[in-house]
Image (tube, rainbow, N blue to C red):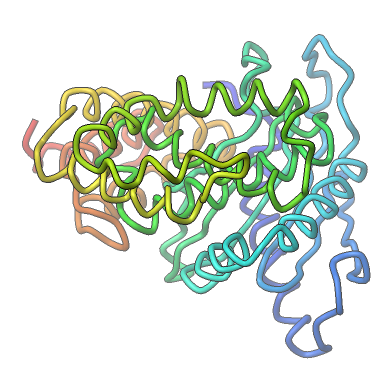
Length: 342
């Protein structure tokens, strides 16, 4: 499968970010992201490390045509820096979530104009990639990618995208819900983190844009959750009543809904379908980003799911990943796949 040069640079970029982190420990951490030094590579990649989080931006592959103007890497990094600094100031709840993520692994946020592929939808603003894992480092890498579409949204909206992908789906990943809960319900939780950001930014909640956002939140993304509340947790419906709904209380109730789904087996078929779709997307993304190293990365991910390393054991997913690694040329992946049930 054809891969971009950006994908081949990512392993080096990630290693460079951790080398930078060691220098920060020796020299002393800057007081803010804006005071930190931007590191530049000869290929145009730029990155920065601050407070346990690495931010980076890579240029578009040479010759790529995305039918739209592409924001330069350095400009994209500056937008990420501003958005991340703002995210830390949007309230105690967001800071607690971010601190929890940093304690569990290495938080990496990258603007990559080649994401999604050339046929990707403008609705793809970003993604949280829980399967991006390097066992040689012995810890999780919580990887969030911002697309060529997402980076062009307004400052406030970019802050919300980070909240949605990194905080929303990142915390769901740590809690083990990404593997067991329906996609629309996971989105409900992630969009609630966006609501928390908009409250922290003190945006006009009566503006047409925010009204449209609130309607989508309640009438689409959280509609199944609200139906559950009406039947199983009526007392928690009151948290929706204010102009600024009680996001922490709603997220707590939502976790109860998640647990109810898992225990009752409700929506199990939908969850299985979502898993298959998500896994296919993850394989495609690993191939796109890792280039000729994709076989090793897919093999590592397969072992992780086979043995339950820092994630819920899933032999079906492990077998699919072993077969994908075999397709990409790994010498022993096919034999490992044969050992697992179909």
